[in-house]
Image 1 (spheres, one colour):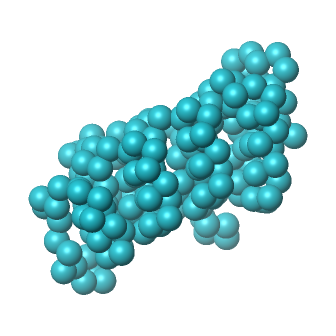
Image 2 (image 1 turned 90 degrees about the horizontal axis):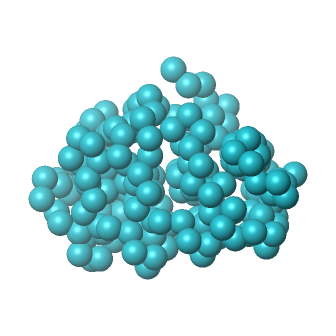
Image 3 (image 1 turned 120 degrees about the horizontal axis):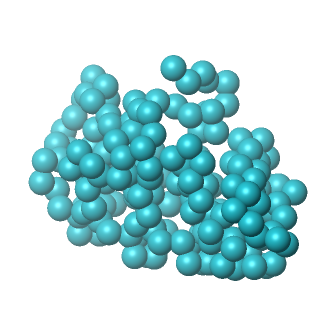
Length: 184
């Protein structure tokens, strides 16, 4: 289970890896571990949630996997909703949680992020906004949600067809996103 007594840099990395492993295996155990971590030390929990492991912070992995309770827990203990990803194969760097939720079409998490101050028109390193990610992935409900929230629709084509999904900025599926799929 996650420990946070000594809180060294090595423990921070180990606790982040533990949460990522739990995300893949057992979301109930993940929620329990996250709550325990926050209860023991809120600031340390925030550091664990934002510590990057191979470019991924657990916070971003929670968003991409759709772990809404963990996303809310992260935000509750002070994780910046505009935290950007590091350099990861298959993703433009500079993606935020809102980019990932928009790509997934996860309106519930999009609304949680917006309610907690996520910037609607933040751009990744190749100048794509969350609404463009949603549009390129044909997530029309996510596009509509972002539009209603006030997102800039410049460059967004809401009339995309299913063939346009190949232009999505997210090129890979990671092991903790969909079990049973291999990473290429």
